[in-house]
Image 1: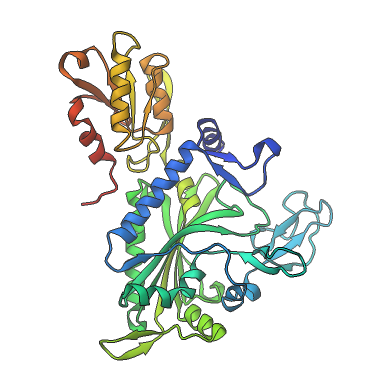
Image 2 (image 1 turned 90 degrees about the vertical axis):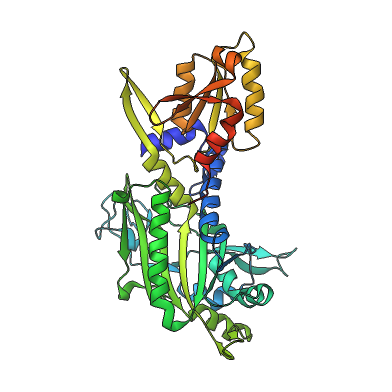
Amino acid sequence: MEKIVSLCKRKGFIFQSSGIYGGINGCWDFGPLGVELKRNLKNDWWYNFVQTRDDMVGLDASIITHPQVWVASGHVENFHDMLVDCKDCRKRFRQDHLETERCPECGGELTEPKAFNSMLRTRLGVSDDSSVETYLRPETCQSIFVDFKEVYSSTRVRIPFGIAQIGKSFRNEVNPRNFIFRSREFEQMEIEFFCRLEEEDAWFERWQADIWKWYLDLGIKESGLRWYEHPKESLAHYSKRTVDVEYEFPFGWGELQGLANRGTFDLTAHGTHSGKDLSFFDAEKNERFVPTVIEPSAGADRTTLAVLCDAYDEEEVAGETRVVMRFVPKLAPIKAAILPLVKKDGLAEIAEELEKKLRRKFNTYYDQAGAIGRRYRRQDEIGTPYCVCVDFETKENGTVTVRDRDTMEQTRVPMDELADYIGTRVSFERD
């Protein structure tokens, strides 16, 4: 894990937030390469689960909502962690994260557990005496339930259908840890899929299959993935059934995505608390009912970390260690690096012009500093799938050398065919 964290900082994937002030625990900044990697991940999720489906629509709701949203959802009453303090070193821990009844740091005696609500509070208003206390959302799904009627009325969708949202959430984690796996500010990719009660099991199985396939399409090895079924006695207050996709990180197995059958809990609760009718009216059957909800909820940051861990590779080449980030091309932050063999004889000018044309199609990078072998290695380390070398043959016949990151094989490609050659290999599009 130390190698992944070091590479992320050194190459501009992920930094500690507010690092010049000593950093802030549980908050991270995605650098120039990290923001592209996570954006590609989110775009692929949206393409796969929203854009290419005819039973899905999108939403982008506000982070701050009416405080009664969290009363109705059960978060104010139920969203608690049980905490214990060490009587000797004074450190605080979540009880469910402890393996023994002693302090994991010093072995000291622990206090009795106390409930702690992990929502982050904020205040709305221009003065303390008139401001209203509310919360930064701990999950993105509640705004989907609150906006359910607005969405289906304005889009005229029919059940079964889903509402998808990507957005930031916040939790006052007691012990943020394991890099970006457990943090206080994170991003979710969530869907609330509304169906009839009699179809809930069938849709649950279909979503389970689609989710599994998506993770494999990200290039994650199947041997590093598994399903975890939550026992009935530990289900959340809203859940009829929950299974998690877990990934084997260097620090152990951890959840990437939950798939829950939320039943009718949320729409019923918000309808009761707001006094508004959140049922669905089926005009064809002249029937009104509250639909069941199947919820796939994925962590964008955690999945990005899994992609980073799974892509990292080291191999011996000509007696040297080659570090390679083997991202699937569609996720790679930079799709192609354009490299003149030398800076003289007009090759740099040709390469610069070529890079400017290609960047209109996909993310590119221009590099003319150092030997060509070292430039290849720099691109390998950040996961660029294709390096394009402009050499003396380019001036003669208009072709360039395209080097594949994984095989290191080189292919001559005409410059006027290069955009299509690379573009088809880095696209989100599926057959």
